[in-house]
Length: 35
Image 1 (cartoon, one colour):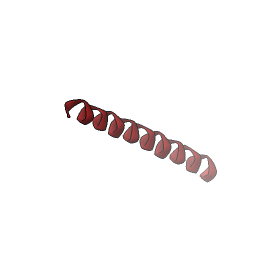
Image 2 (cartoon, helix red, strand yellow):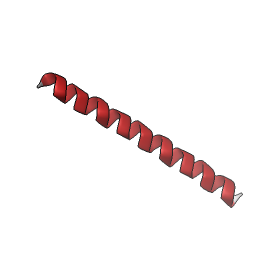
Image 3 (cartoon, helix red, strand yellow):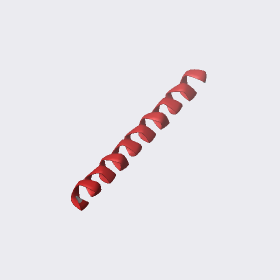
């Protein structure tokens, strides 16, 4: 069960990292458009 929980936590961290990176890219694109 520990392994399963670790995998689930890892997936959550990866999804959070992808979402945060995507939002950062979107923000930078908006800044470039404003400039």
